Image 1 (cartoon, rainbow, N blue to C red):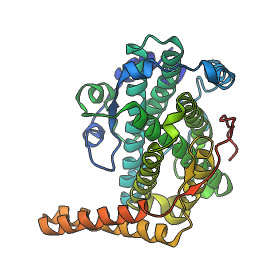
Image 2: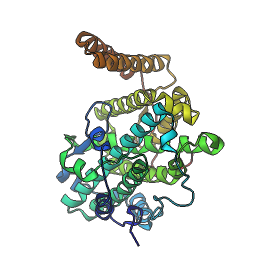
Image 3: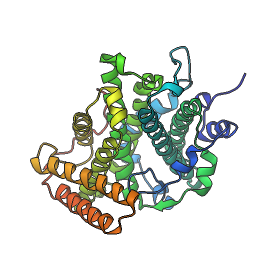
Image 4: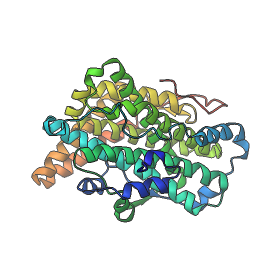
Length: 365
């Protein structure tokens, strides 16, 4: 019997299975590095290795215990619920945008796997390396599952090639915490919002992969819980000047999501989802979740926030058009407009709150 990456118990095993499968043209898309595409990261692994979780033991041990129980082992593979997809007759623009969504999602999941696996390889702190190995296992399964879906469309991402050739961006550990925590929590909010919408409106479920989103987003939720506890282990990360860094990453992650989603109008139309409604739903959920560790949330109801999002999206749209036409001056002016719009978003006053003494949450949406 052929083994599937969904049944693998380690990231290394899952990736080895994937590398035996054909991979092709999607790799070129995954290799791109722009402000909007998922990146590969590296960091100061010695600093990560020095984390002491002894004073958060009461929350740390139950999280690790749940992850060790491996509730999603064997889940991320096709079964009788996987409907036949008529890729040949899919509306061309929808097909293009959906494949772009899958490639971006696969690259983002694999990016996490690479970072987490490297920490496990380099570290000697048994508790930290255990956590990162467990998270790498989950991300490898997710990336492999998306690649299975891509193969049906005649494309796939060569994960081994990406590991060797894609450019890595260095981030200090605290920036890894902020960015990855938000990526995991906003990923949960995105997947669960789509999943619940399609539960109520199954006529819009144009691809079977959406049926797997609930368990998928629960993995994302657990990973976010882990990063919340890593930040709790070092309280200065959420105080003082670092609050400004938290605000920067909140603003950047929310704005990036908004821009990306507005680049896929056919995809969202097929789902029966208005991108503005979807963004607000995801921002609302993510803001409630991040109160567990961040002392601020963004004021997403502020009229300046909404105007800023519209401005940065329009500037990005004009920038893409200028690039396609080779108009250098228009590219410059659009870039300046995008920068000014980001400043508008960043300068919207944030909302402060007290951080609860107990950090751990359970998926509730």
